[in-house]
Image (cartoon, rainbow, N blue to C red; front, side, top):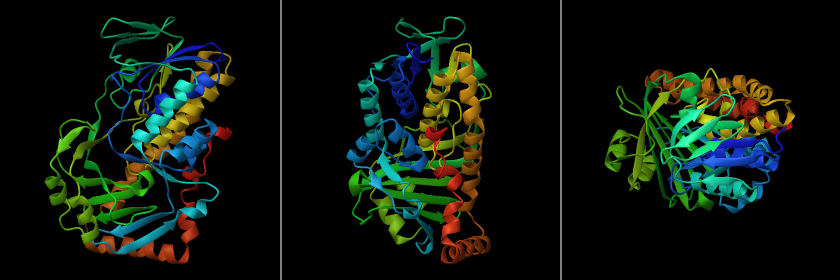
Length: 388
């Protein structure tokens, strides 16, 4: 039933652009409203695990991903904060599935290209003032424009305007963790692995980007208080270095190379109770924000986009399709979010005896049952939404 259906998507992020291409390829008339004056993304990396790659492949964009300088990952290395190896997971055992590291701006760029090639209309400088559902859904912008559609999809992130219409404005709660992100030149010989240095109440994730030209850094530390939830707050690199000054030589060297860094508080939002209603729907972070401890935020948005298109294509009515979309996604995203939420403490063990015991168990598992350690993630990486 997607043929000629008119759909307006609020937000030109990963989920919004992916959904736009998927729907347009199925015959829908799709418009994206983006508040910025250009579709850009700040410098940061993300991980595309096999379940996300399956969606990009089905969208016909895997080739563009390869051309973007995405790095084919081969190993996850868990280390203690001083640098000693704890366990290494061999990602090549996922074969024929593949796992990539990609610059966020490059993924946004290829998704934008894919959307435009599919005939999607992208409207920039479209700051949403009002969203209305009902029999004639519409979006009005602050400069007085009005966009009517059969369905309006909020792919507008954790501060979603559409989510508030469907679910009210319930504030999130601070998790007690803050994060920094930065990109530094790769002078460390990093080729294809992701490393997680785990320390008392802190951890540091690093992996190569853009063909190995850069290394992406995400550092997380526990903190009692935080004000505001933003990805764009600049911090002094010296503060980042000071927070990890007792880490080993290798992680401290990477942090010392940081010249510009962003910091943000990690807040926990509940999964939206209503993902749709009266011609409105939610996708990605607007429906189910997740903490960055499973590297699945972008991938869940890609899975959402495919499930959304599939559900509407097979439905006899818009409402039936939106109900099916939520039912396809709800339990899966809850499981991923709960796993991500529960991962933080594993990286942040502050008691020395507990940390030693936990790391010893991981070392033994890696030595005697490496396959089993990797198979525990089959429910995530082995899932293929395009096969539903």
